Image: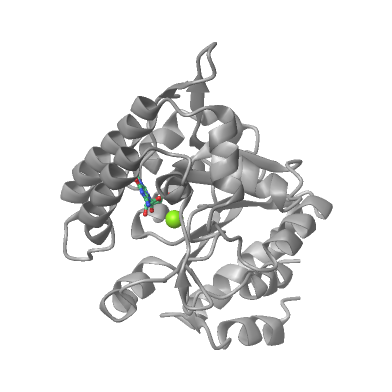
Length: 293
Ligand code: MG7
Ligand code: MG
């Protein structure tokens, strides 16, 4: 039996917006019938698992961790910051059509990746950048990850960010890697310990569905997990549902809306089943997860 009270409580949370509560309640009901053994989680990392703002201060993305690190050259920091100032506003601009945005994002990520490679960063530099960065995991993400592990529900972290920064942030927070699969931009180092390239294909904000097609092994190994919870903060994160398209019954989509909130709330409400405002911790997501048991 669906605990309607639990669902109602989740949907009426102060940070939650939902365009069609009847439809979402129905979806939760369907998913609950199959239970945790048929569930998997697909989550973006930057500004989804991590905070966009924390105590009014803007936090860093995994790319931002390198951009801001004092161990990088002045030139690198200036160049990547200029790229950020140019391209970030385009990333969150709801008026740029998707097909135009994907090209802009490819340009940004390619240029930024190029700067990291020209800098020839070492593994230690990446670790130090992560350690001193303002990449901040949302509160209770650790609780959520532990619960998933206990319930044997697989978590895919599918990120267009820098893989080694994410790994380090997780390990610093004692997030157990069991049960978590990371797909992200992984740096590859040469014998002198200098970053030589990002393992292709370069993942950007706009191409997750294309990349998903090349990660068939993971998705095929979870073919019995016909229900998914998708967590993202960019409109394009919705593309992660393409990962499970071949066998999926239900994808419950959750969008964290962190920036340009007024301009984008309608768009987010019509794209995601549930929208989370105010950059909160993982309490709402945990509540949703518990509705599905
Ligand atoms: N993001 C992507 N790139 C950069 C960059 O060069 N600098 C900074 N500060 N942030 C960047 O996980 C992907 C997220 O990382 C951010 C190339 C984007 O905002 C993107 O959503
Ligand atoms: Mg993100």
